[in-house]
Length: 539
Image 1 (cartoon, rainbow, N blue to C red):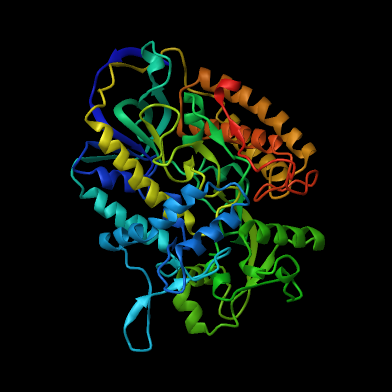
Image 2 (image 1 turned 180 degrees about the vertical axis):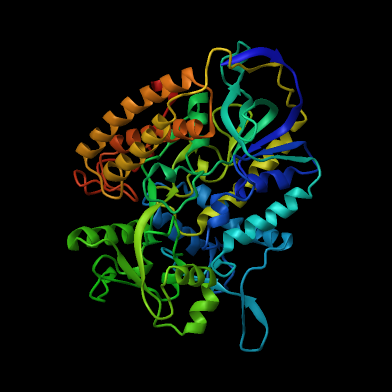
């Protein structure tokens, strides 16, 4: 829907999203380009802000980049791109140093000689301690620091409460749809849709784990960027690899509260209701096995025993140690009557991280000219079939800088986008059936959890596909007749990524990494591992 042509202001770079990836791009370009940052809530309401764990980087003399690479490749189950893994791992120390220069105060510990060194913790899949953290609230510290820097940065304009509706390509001006020219965005406070023209657009909108009923993610992780890139003509890949964090707090009043993997890294034990450990039955690394194995083990025990949760126990460690290392988790659990220094924490798996996304090259370029994707919204080849803990923030930092450098190099030769049509609402009305949105939102998330969750079957996936086809038809009709709202936009994105996830899962006739099928319980040994790539051109 669009109306008459308008010129309006042109931004050099339009960054959509305000987590670590988007803010890294914006800060690296500040003072060198005119940057607009759009986010659909306040700046810090991102998955980055809620990340507890940390940033993986080799800082210990006993560790090495080769070891970090080996661990990442092992977790990725044959689908990581080794050259990408090397690039990210080798740039980790520099990325961390930039955060320190910005003012992020990573946790330290005292050496025997009284001097201080950074405290490195260990998480699932890592063979060494290499995770820098700020207690158990690393993401909050990073996001707050980057936000403070951004608000003081020259040439950067922030647009909060702006939900992007769709990207604009040169198809709007009679072209072939191969170049991105900007985006339409809804101001949730006024209901007005604005046109944002830009020489370059960067998608940094995060993942899509809200497509599942139970998730550790904030409400806004509805796959918007993946969905709008798909509609604009970009390929996506590996959407079947949805990572389920093994340990989210199980309590009727606790919404999406993550119990950091670092709790297991510091000796936390997973227990059955009778107090017995069970991870030794599933993997030699026990509680420090990769996340997919731990999540499936917990799911197996819950289904086998008919229980609502298992327990994570760190109470054997000294109380001062627990409180010092996990102050946020300690305080939050205490609010629900759980003293983690004295009793185990009830936990369940929940959808956590989207390993697939928009296909990009090694500097974040997508299939469309002038469109980049960085962070969880993208599929870089770093994670493969399973993300290793604390590589995600690292990816945001390394790719954010790489994308910014690539944009800066191309900026001088990039033409301004032409005049584009304003958003047109002349043929739509206000909805009198808002209940449809709430009902469909709930239905998508429930059948995705039931049929496309931790353990899958061909029959479950077929059921999910029938339901998503029906819902997408309903949503398309609704979208075409009524004015857009933030809830409608999120539902539209959610249903699109649900469909992409189901299609990718149906295409993979094997079990690999995060995709586990009872009908295809082993990796396909008949051919080399390959990505699941979907193209809009294939219908």
